[in-house]
Amino acid sequence: MSLVEKIEKRVSQNCLLIVNADDFGYCTERNNGICECFLNGLVSSVSLLVNGEAVQHAVDLAKKINIPMGLHLNLTEGKPIHSTVSSLLDNSGMMRGKFGLRRLWNITKSI
Image (cartoon, rainbow, N blue to C red):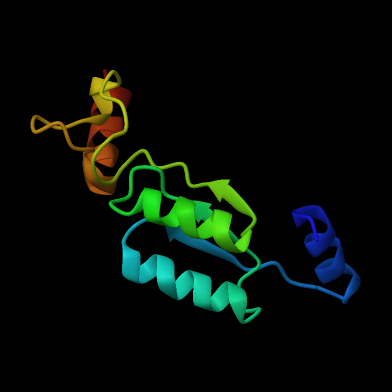
């Protein structure tokens, strides 16, 4: 059965709620828990955290069990996948975090 057919089957079974698991790729433990929830019908889809420590593990699992997947847009936490947007990074090359980004936003608004 194709992915589209699986989704259509779930919708035709009076699926009234889509539950998306966030941060897929953060770590192997989280990935395994999300997959367990998906296989038991508790989660409908996932958002891949592309800069997560276990992103390849997540991608491999998703391919294996055909999890519908989107992307988690992350502009604040962890190691960037590309370093050309230096305004989002601190001196160590990591993203500034939510509070750091807010401080930067407030500074640029006052200029």
